[in-house]
Length: 246
Image (cartoon, rainbow, N blue to C red; front, side, top):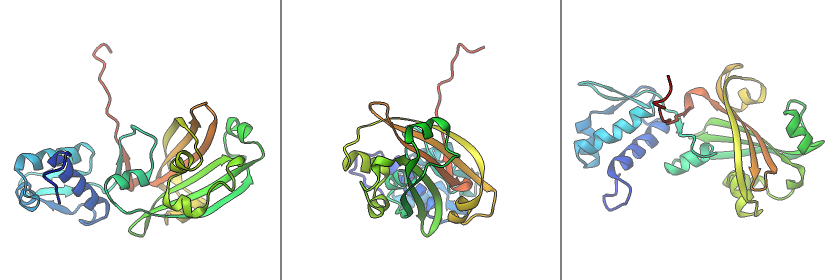
């Protein structure tokens, strides 16, 4: 429910609560959330507050409003505004949605040949491989394949990676000062271990992020491939329209 004494605006509290319920599949696929009047009564807020909350969810493409019928789930995806380098755990933590994380792999390995040449030249022959699988209510939603420089081997445990993100461990335990990251987002088909870990058929649509992360001195500290089941994740970017463009 909403906290009328909190500094967070009421409409944002309502939107976050509804977003959390949608992500955890309370309404099912394309289920009915309620009319504006029903939601106003439920949250004990004004209709104006509800309208602003629903507008936020509409902007993210999460809900549809059908005149005279109510508000319905459009999709139950997590929405990443792409303002920071984040992952599923960061986004669900903001909504107080519990994410289960398993780490089946944390080991030194031969640096894979498929990794870009510039990354292999930095890592050398061996790299630390970390596989992290994130689930919501028992359903896998993200497969994170990370490769780190070999000198990080033995610096943290599987249990720590299950409780924290790699960036939190870098910063809070290892004292690594985080710098910038570069990432490319593309559509792909789930194959091999990604399909198995996300419980998807071969070549099922996924959103895939290829990311390189650096410390403040420009040293590469992570190469990562993030795969999300396509219907569970969305990217929303707000951009300025340049009036000078012809």
